[in-house]
Length: 136
View 1 (cartoon, rainbow, N blue to C red):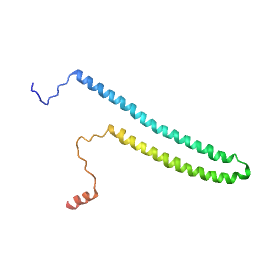
View 2 (cartoon, one colour; view 1 turned 90 degrees about the vertical axis):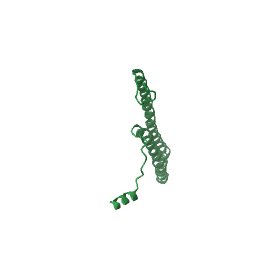
View 3 (cartoon, rainbow, N blue to C red; view 1 turned 180 degrees about the horizontal axis):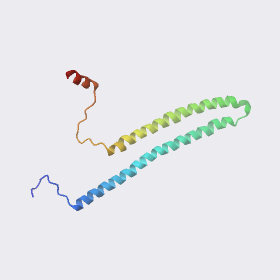
View 4 (cartoon, helix red, strand yellow; view 1 turned 135 degrees about the vertical axis):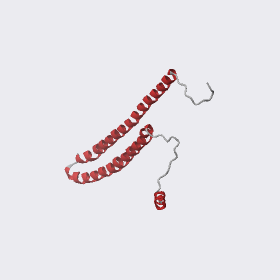
């Protein structure tokens, strides 16, 4: 037996230990990914609670006023309700959920499939495509 040879010497114990390590790593990854996707669910719950809050303290309050002022107050409160709904719920919550979903796909989902393996990145450039076609 030559010291430093490239032959792999594996026995059953090494294989079992490696499989145990991979099993633990996979299990922890599943738990971590599930918890991350549960955060998206929590964001949707927060979104529904904000909608309910705006409804209860906005339109419902305007509808409970005396009939003389109801139309004016309802118009103002409806405008306020729609403005806040669009600004808070659609823009902020939508952006937050969108960014969180991108992070989940980039960090957790793609980490299961991507391996660079030392291959250098070749950036796509239209100029290089045009140059290759003009030379051919």
